Length: 384
Image (cartoon, rainbow, N blue to C red; front, side, top):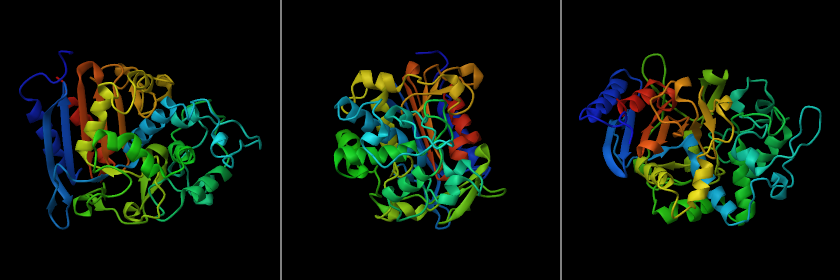
């Protein structure tokens, strides 16, 4: 283990300080942070409010809307299907979804592969990356976080009607590819994505609070968005600026409570910090019982190089998450090969495999909990 990671008796104090400062500064409403070192829980804390207006305290088993923290779970299900031989990385998407044939700007229809979807190199994008006059906006394509009741088939129809932003395989562009993968999984299994993830991932791990439906509504945390003063409660239809993409994101928190909403493979799950940790520790330890070690190694291998800048400078991309290719470019105290991902509702995690370290920081505050100072403060607190 590196001498820089989790050394010193004051690590818990530093983590407490990072959490307390975020709450005192009104950057967060509530959070659950769990740190595992060498397979054992080294730190666990719930702080702040699950619902500020009712003064309901955050609990360690509070349930969070995942947003993009969904993607690694769905990717794991896909990789299991690849292990089983029913899907291949270089299969064309049209093998499973014959009608999904988006065109390039010249009118040609390129081949989009499963690999392209999983690595965000398909040429697809997200509505939140566009202005109000973008193709996705005009076609009313959903990001997977809004439009309660929308079906997957209808959203894929709208998505396929928009021109691709680039030729498949030409570069990284974060996209709705995992929502398309949800359609592929449903085609392959003959059931819902919800059932496939449960059968292939969560049930084998004994995870009961994480999925595409809320296990206990009383434990579901209310979501907030950072404003200039204090975080504002997110309501259906709220549009929030996403400065990193020069766009905006539309939220509908009620979506998860509508059984008619399609299970978004890119953002539709909910769950607890403890369940996320369990899943990530499974990955860190080689994938059993859900995946083979060689599959996990492939997933943890940078497929694109640091030029992808999947989470900013220095970050490449594997299958399901960003892979730290160049810590000096970030800069970060994490080891090369560290895995990391985050979600728009305010969540983040990382696995530093070289240091046997897994850190989960779930919050109910966008976007501080996804990409704000809190994320780097928690990271730095576990390293000297």
